[in-house]
Amino acid sequence: MKKGLPLGQGLTADIFEWGETEIVKLFKKGYPACLIDDESSICQKVYELGLPVPAYCGSIEIDGRYGLIFERVTGELLPRLMAANPFDLPKYARMMSELHFAIHKHTVPELPFFAARMASAIKGHKTLVPEEKITLLDGLYLRADGILSVMGISTLIIFWFPPADR
Image (cartoon, rainbow, N blue to C red; front, side, top):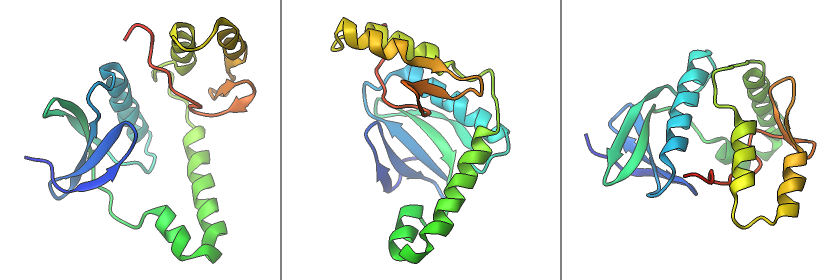
């Protein structure tokens, strides 16, 4: 099979049609393979929880770029719906909050430990000065409910620094 029409573009990857029922997320050349592996593992585990997410269908390499294949989901994009129907924003906000709540109700201990990875990335980052590293590391911890917090701001990921050893 070969990649079809482009569907989207992001900072780290481009999305293409992959047949009638799937899409392929092709990562930019040089994107760390370990993070692609982590993403495939996370996507598979989240799907297995029964959450409303596309199924992870496999990995592929196309023209020197690594990619992940997912079930293709049809429907309107939420930002388009919100722009077209601004009076329905409360409804869409509720949908988003219910989805986030459903996601955060689950614990998956075998997922990569992001606090440890983030700490390693901060320690090895070349452009941060020691004082900045200390400040970030002092504020980095994983709450008991499994949410990563940096300086008291709860988030899944605030920023991404590639691991120093990659």
